[in-house]
Structures are given as C-alpha cells and as structure tokens.
Image (tube, rainbow, N blue to C red):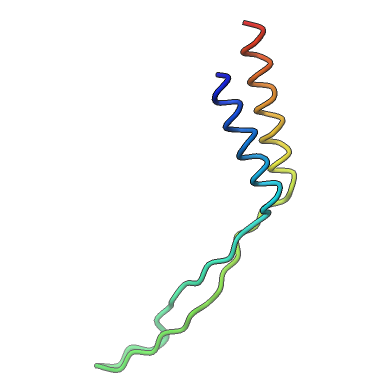
Amino acid sequence: MKSFGIILIVLGIIAFIYTGFTYTQTEKVLDVGPLEVNQEKEKTVSWPPLVGIALIAGGVIAIVVDKRR
C-alpha cells in the first residue's frame, strides 16, 4: 500500500506540472484511385490541475492508512 501511495504522489506531481500534451494525428482527406491526400492535425489532451492535487492527496492518504495498520 505504501508503494501505491508513492506512485500516486509521483503521478500527481507530474500531472500537476504538465497539465496536458499535444500530439499529431494524420487523417485521410481524399482517396481517389492512386491519389491520396493526408492532413496532419494537432490534437491536445488537457486536464485541470485539480487532478494532480487529487492524486497527491490520494497518495498521502494511502501512506497514512498503511502506517496505521
């Protein structure tokens, strides 16, 4: 349980610092016979900083519960 709490804290710190990421996705726009036209689109995945805070709090709670047992 203690290692799970530490993992949650580390993930929470990472999620708090990096509130999202961007990736590029290639989409097929036109496909006519041998002719193919593709378009690259940037997409963003983001989350609020409260997610990181919640993960950190969950990790601290997991460590405290483990010490009480």
